[in-house]
Length: 587
Image (cartoon, rainbow, N blue to C red; front, side, top):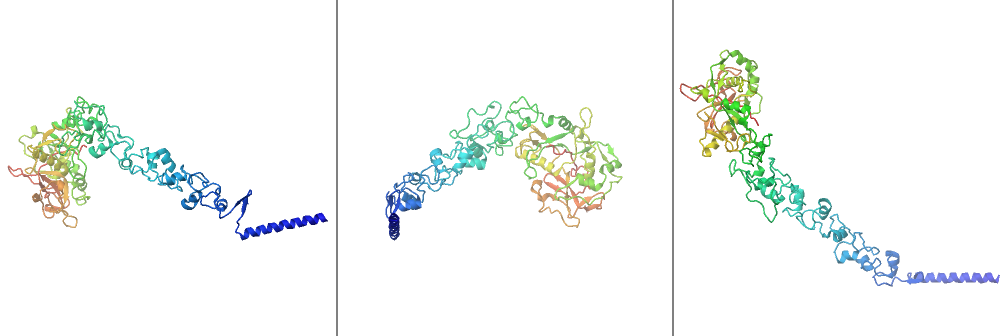
C-alpha cells in the first residue's frame, strides 16, 4: 500500500512539472523547442543566413546549421527573401546552371530555364552552344537560336553561315536557298550573285532550261570559249560577281538579256538557239556541227517556200497580253487567179449554213459575241463563181493583176479549196486561210522594225523584235510584197458596228486598241454598218450589215465592207481590196 502511494505521488509530480513546463513555453511564445536535445529559438539565427532557426526548420526546411543549404553559393535568406529561388536546390529551374551562376555570372533568370524563350535551356546555351542566353537570336540574323541549331543546322553565331552574301533568314524564308551551302544548285555561282546580280534561279542549275548550266552561260560565250566543266573554281565574295555576263545581242544589246536567262541564246555559235537544238535528236547546243532542221527545211516548209510563202517569225508580244506570239506562214503576194472556176453550187455547198459559216470563219474583234444575225440557210445565188487555183508564187503571178473583185466570204471559200502538194503530187494537210488581224499586225511590226533598223521596210528578219528559234537567229530574212497603205487586203476578223437595237457598237475615236497599230485619222467607216453586195440576212447596199470585215492597209483600218461586199480596182488602179493566204500560228 505504501509502495502504491509512493508511485501515485511520483506520477502526480511528473504531471505537475510537465504542465508547468508547457505553460512556461506557451507564455514565452514557444521559446524552447528541442530536436535531439538541441534547443532552437525564433530569435536565434544559428548559421547567420538571415533566417531564424525556427523558420528554417518549420517553414523553409533548410538547414539551420548551414547558411547555404543547397551549396549553390547563395545565402538561404537571400534565396528566399531576395531572389525567390529554391534554397534547397542549387538549380532552381533545372536548366543546368546553379542559382549563383545565373544571378552573378550570366545574369539569367534562375526561375526560368529558358531566359530568352528561344527554346534552348540556359545551361545548354552557355555550356554547349555558347550562344547568348539573354537574346533569342544571338547573331540577329532573323532566326532564333533554337531554329538555327535544331532545325536548319546553321551557325547561330554568324548571320551568314555559308558566307554567300545572304542572311540565313533570307535564304530560308525568302529565297528558299540552302543557308549552309553558298552555291545551293551547284552551278558554281554564289547564291547572292545569282539572286542580286544575275537574277538567275539560285535553286536551279539551268535557269532558262536550255541544257547549258548558269555558271557556263554567265562566264562563257561561243564554242571556242565554252567550258562545259563549269568554272575553274566557284565564285566567292572576295572574287566578286561578273559585271558583264555574256549576251548574244539579239534582238539588240539594249533589250537583250544575259544568256543564262535566254533559252534562245546560241551557246555554240552555230546560228541555232539552244532551245531549238534540244528539241531534236540531231541537235546539240554545245556542238556547232550538230543542228536541228529549221522550219524552212522541213518537208512542209520546203513546199510552202516553193508555193511562194514566207515564214513570219514570232518571239514577241503582238497583242499586249503578256505572251509572245509564235510564227506562221504567209503568202508573199496577194492573190491572183488561174482562171479555173468553181461552180456556184460548189460554193454553196462549201459555205452551207450562212450564219454558222460566217461565225466559224470570221471572228469578231471588238466583242466576245456569237453571230446570230445572218440567214440560217445555204448561199444559193447563182452568180457566185470563183477561181479555186489561186496563185501566190512570183513566177506564176508575173503580169497578173491582184484579185480585187472577191468578197471576203468568197475569198475564204476559195482558200478552203486551195491545196498544196509535195514534190510527188500528194496533198499536204496544211490549213490555208485568211490572215487574222494579229497576224497582219505582226508582219507590220516586223517591217516597221526593219525600216527603223536601217532596212528598206520590206524585209522580215528574225531577232528584230524578238527571237524565234525555228529559223536562223540572225541571218533569216525574207521579203513580203504588196504590203502597206497602197495595198488594201481582207483579214479574218470582223468588227461589230451596231448592235441588234441599232445602237453604235464601235466608235473609232475611242475604241481603237493600241496593238492594232492604226492611225486614228485614217479610219474608214460608215456611221451605222457596212456595205453588203448580196443579201444574206440584213439586206443589201451601204450600211446594211451590222458587221464590217476588217480591211488593213498599213496604218489604215477600213470597216465599210461586209462579208459579201467588195471594192474593186478601177482601170489601172490598185485601190481595190484583195487578200493573201496564211496558215494558223504554228507555235
